[in-house]
Amino acid sequence: MHVSRTSAPVAGSGIVVVGAGLAGPVAAMYLARRFGRVTVLERRGDPRHLPAGQGRSLMVILSERGWRVLRELGLEEAVRRICVPLAARCGHLPDGSTVVTPYSRDGAPIWAVERYRLHCLLLDAAEAEPGVRLHFERPVRAVDPEEPKLLVGAGTSERWIPCRHVLGCDGVHSAVRAALVARGARERVSTLELAYQEIVLDLPSCDRGLMHYWPAGDALFGAFPLASSPRFAGSVFFRREGPRPSYAAAVDGPALARQFAETFPGLAAGIPDLREQLATKPVSAVRLTRCDRWVLGGTAALVGDSCHAMAPFMGQGMNCAFEDVRTLVSCLDREQDWERAFTAYERIRRRDADAITDISYQHYRTMSRLPDPRHEAEEAVARRLVALMPHRFVPLYERCAFSEESYSSALAEERRLRALARRILSRHGPAADLPDAHLRACVTQEENAGRAS
Ligand SMILES: Cc1cc2nc3c(=O)[nH]c(=O)nc-3n(C[C@H](O)[C@H](O)[C@H](O)COP(=O)(O)OP(=O)(O)OC[C@H]3O[C@@H](n4cnc5c(N)ncnc54)[C@H](O)[C@@H]3O)c2cc1C
Picture 1 (tube, helix red, strand yellow):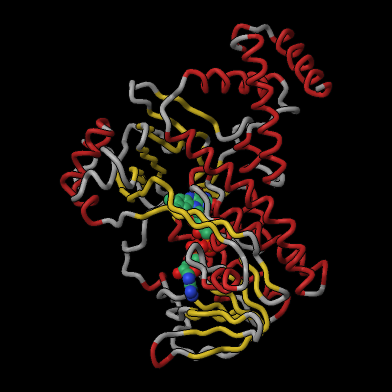
Picture 2: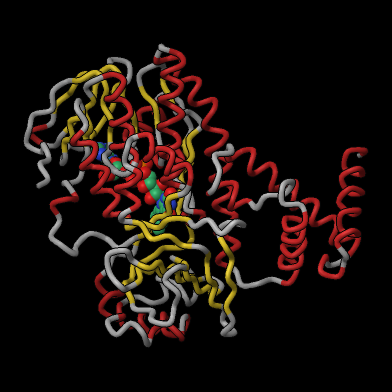
C-alpha cells in the first residue's frame, strides 16, 4: 500500500527538495543518508494513486550513469525487473528498407522502462528511506534564498517555511531557478519545434529486442516494447507549427489521424483506435532550458531539468539528472561545506550539461531528417574509422550511454572524429573504396597535418 503524506503539515526542515519527479526522490535518498531529515515538496498529487491504466505510457532509457546511481541506492535489481533490454535501434525508412544500428559495439543492451513505473518505484523507495518526508500537492510558489525560506501551498494554506538548503529538482518551470534568475542568473527557455503524443500499439512483426523508429522528415514515430504487456509504447512527433505534417495543420482528432496515416502509411492500419488515441491523449511540448548559474551561496542548487532540459532522443535527460545528484553529493562529501560544495558542483557539472544538451539537439536533427548523401558519406567514413581502430575511436552514443566519461570529453572526441572523417572524405573520397592499410595511413597523415597546422 502506498502511504503518501499529503495531509501531514510541512514542518520546517534543514534540507528541502522541490519536486518529486525523477531526480527529486533520488536526491532525497542520497541526502537523507548523509544528513538525516529531508523534506520533499511536490506540486502535483501522488502518481501512485492514479486509477490503474491512467499512468502515461512514455518509456525512458536507462544507461550506465543511471544504473550507477540506482546501484548505489540499492535499487538496481528492482528496476531491472521492470525494464526491457534493447540491443539496437531499427529504422524503418520510407522506401520500405530497414536499418539496424546496435546501441553498443559489443552487443550490450540499453534498458527501457515505463517512466510511470520507474517514477512510482523511486517514490516508494524514497518514502521507505528513514528521514525522507514526501509531501504532495504542495506547490512551492517562491523561494527566498537569503532568509532562506519557501512559500508553499495555495490560498489559505499558503505559508512560508524556513529551511537551510533548497535543491531545485522542479523541472523546466522551476521555482528555484526563478529565484536565481531574480538575482541575476540568465536562463534560456525554448520549445522544440516538435511536439508529441503517446500511442500504444501492436507491432506483431517487430522484434521486441529492438527500439523501432520511422523517420519522416519533419515527423518521427518511435516505439519501445512494453515490459508490462505484449504491446508497444509509441510516441509520434509532429512539428508544432507549419505546413503538414504538423499539429497546427491538423486541428482535430480525425484530421490528425488522416495526417498520421499519410505520414506513416505502414503503421496506421495496425492501430484500430488511432483516431481515439490522437483525439484524447495530450499533445506535449518538449521544453529546452539552460541557466548560466545553478547555485546561490550554500543555500540553493539546481539539478536535472530545472537547469538543463534537453531534446529527448539521446535518452540522457534523466540519466544526466541522476549523475548531477551524484556529483553534487560527492562535492558535499569532499568539501564538508555547502557553499564550497555547491560552487564545485556548478563548476564541474555545467560544462557537461551544456555538452549533453548540444549532443542531444544534434542527435535530434540527425534522427528526424531523411538520409542525406553528404552526411551519409561522412557517417560511413566515421563508421569505418570506428571499426578499424576501436580503441582509438568510440561512437558518441556509446560514450554517453555505456560509459561515465564526462559528456564534455565525449563531445570533444566526437568533434575530432567528425573533423577527421570530413578531411579524409574531401581529400581521399568515400572510405568504402579505401583498403584498411590505406585508411590507417590517411588517419596518420591527417592527424600529423592537424598537429602541424
Ligand atoms: C518524450 C521524452 C522522452 C524522454 N526520454 C528519456 C530517456 O529515454 N532517458 C532519459 O534519461 N531521459 C529521458 N527524458 C528526459 C527525462 O524525462 C527528464 O530529463 C527527467 O524527467 C528530469 O527529471 P527532473 O526530476 O529534473 O524533472 P521532472 O521529472 O520533470 O520532475 C520535476 C517535478 O517537479 C515538480 N514541480 C515543478 N514545479 C514545482 C513547484 N513549484 N513546486 C513543487 N513541485 C514542482 C513537477 O510536478 C515534477 O514532478 C525524456 C523526456 C521526454 C519529454
